[in-house]
Amino acid sequence: MIDKTKLILENVDLFPNKELGYHTYGNRRRNKDVNSYRRFISLSDEKNAYELEIHLNHNIRFDKKQLVVDGNLRKWYFGKDSRQDFTKKKFLQCINLLSNKIGIDDASLYNAKVTKLETGVILRLKQKERAIINSIFGYKGFDKNTYDKYGVEFKSSNYDVIFYDHLRRVYNQKGKRQSNFGKITNKNFLFRYEIQSHKMSGTPMFKEKLNTLLKVRNNWDYIGQNLIKTLGDVEFVKVISPETYVSIKNGGKKEMTKYLTFKGMEAIGIENFRVLLEQMTNKHKSEFKKDFVTLYNSFLEAEKMDYKKFLIRKLKKRVKALA
View (cartoon, rainbow, N blue to C red):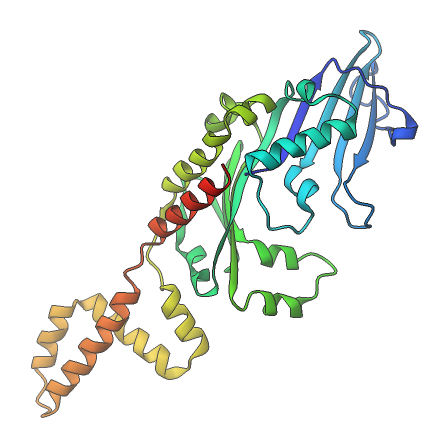
């Protein structure tokens, strides 16, 4: 449930040895009393392995060193394109491994301040449920951006709430074969939901509960509960159901005509539609009535789905599994 983060630890006892991969960085642009060094660490020797950015800032005047860790812990631990989310156990293992890579004990690293944080999960849904993204409408007056049928984000100056097609984003990367995307998504839809904080002090849900790495560890259950609560504050609208979406997508004029007929009946009301039918003089009007009512009821059953309740139910199940 933890992804991107920026950690800052003061007064560390580390040396920016070149043997460890540290290089001078920044050229004292901000503060002439501070020497800045940088290195990148990964868990694989592969060319495209995900790397965390490590900064070591040495204040020469006061002889104090500051450690900064910046990047996506989930991608670093599981792999750049991984679909896995952290359980608490895996997260603790990640921090232990990170501490060893940096060269400090994990007890010290847990004292680090969290200045940026992203929490989130990947929900495995069915391909026919892809239309759910289109039903996500608003969140607390935040600015809304949509990315075709693949994503929705609600942005503010302090934090964003984001929903998107995880596999679509993976396959948008350079070097990914688009032909593989169709094969993988034939039956699968990986729905990504995340909260990104750019400024912890301006993110009420994070600033007291998750502003240190120790609090992230101790308040692990809160992370999941907050994801559930925030999803509950998101406004959804009723749009085409997943079942209808698949029918129209794979169908033709006949399927589209049926759906538009249903929407017309829905718009004027079923009782008004019955009254309208009664005005017909055609001797087959009873048959027409039966056919239209059957059509209406078939769509009505599919359109009953409450997208918000459906996602919250899925999210609760996922959060429980990641405890």
